[in-house]
Image (cartoon, rainbow, N blue to C red):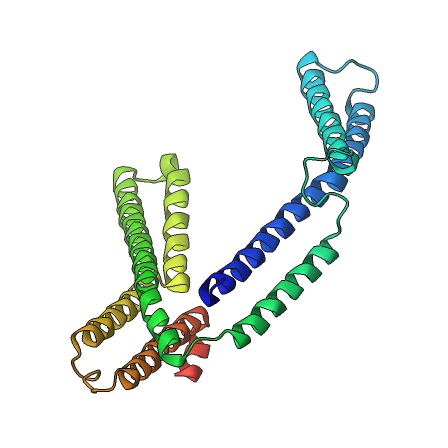
Length: 271
C-alpha cells in the first residue's frame, strides 16, 4: 500500500469510528430514554385523569391519541431491546459502551499520527498537496460569503417592510387603536431584526469571507503564472512562500471572525 493510500485509510477509519460513536449515542439514548418516557407518560396520564376527569370519562379522541402514543412507545422499546440484546442484532456496536468506542477513536488517531510521522512525504510534496486543496477552501469561503450576504439582504428587506408597515398603519388609523396589535408586532419585528443585524453582522462577515477568497485566488493565479512574489527560479522557495502567505490570510480571517463575535467594547480593545 502506498503512503497516500495508507494515510487515506487511516482517515477513513477515524471517520467511520466517529460516525459509529454518533450512532451508538443515539442508540443508547433511545434504548434507555424510551422506557423512561413510557413510564413518565403513563404517570402523567394518571395524574391528568385524576386531576381533571376523576368523576367523568375522558373523550374518545384524547383516549385514542394517548393510547396510540403509548402503543408506539411500547413498540419502540421492544424493538430497541431486541436490536440490542438479540443474537442476530442489526446494530453494529450492540452491547458496546461509548467509552470503548471513544478509546478506539483515540487509538486510531494516535496510529494515524504515528504513521504520518513515519510516512511523511517531503515538504515540496506537502506544499503541492496544500495548493491543490485550496480551490475547495475558496469555494467554501465564497459559499459562506453568499449565505451571509443573502441573510443581510433578507434582514434589510424585513426592516424596510416593517418600517413602512409601521408608518402606513399609523397613517391609516387615527387614532391607532384598531390596529394597535399590528403596530406592536411590526415595531417588535423591526427592533428584533435591527438588534440581530447589529449582533451577527452578516454584511461584515460576507465582506471578510469574500475578501479572503479573492486574496487566496489571486495568490494561486500568481503561483501558476510564476509572477511576483512567486517568480523565483527555485520552485521549492515559491511553494514555501505561497504556503506561508496563504496561511497568514487564513489566520487573519479567523482573527476577523473572532473580532466580530466579540462585543463592541471587546473589539475596540482587540483592535
